[in-house]
Length: 347
Image (cartoon, rainbow, N blue to C red; front, side, top):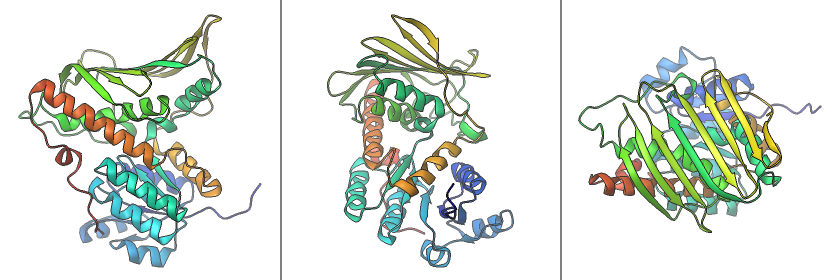
């Protein structure tokens, strides 16, 4: 067993997801401190946590000398904070979306590669124990070559970790394409990984209700090489919540089903149907598997989900948002929908 000290990670941002990541880092003994945007936030947070709280990232870096940076700030300043870590010579973790624009994420990837700095993109779904086991089955050839990916969400989605739901604006219900963009990115991240890390090249929208209250979607994505990904939402409130990912291959299929009280990973082939074990469980904090991966990356510099993956997820979400816009005849500006611009300066 190694006696090396636990790496210390400086957290930038303490909003809904920032609090979850702070808790996960604290549980790992790795939280060096927190950087927030306003004086009021700093004063309030300083009274509720034991770790030091800062308003200025440069000052926090100088005083705490962290081993890594975890970026959970607003999307428009992700790029600035990622660059700060890269140029300081320390590994970075950034929550999805990696940036506002796909091109920015790719530029950051090139800068990180040139500097030899690993940057991990945190999309909690691909770190979940059941998903990792599903991906391992595919890599081992258990269902042959992947032909099709299907995602279905039914009922009222329950946000991870007890986060508050987005407020509903009746004026935009049915036309809230920003909600579609943000929500579908979760499934697009997974589908992109299953497509070999590619971004979709096209999407056909057959039905959409761009709503927070009753989200509905039926969209078919096409990837290089012909793989197809069907994404469906049926958010009728009378349906019991469940979320299912099915991966169809040339020699069988895999199902990852999440529903109240149970998570199932099932393989069907010509040899029969089998429920598969997976190491670990879904905890109440979805950030914990990500922090485990971050700690491993700090020791190995092997990046499980990099900035190219982040860029491809942004690209896929933009393609979908534009297709839903066309389907509903609701004009949008993609950059505004995605967070504005990638700012070059910030806290």
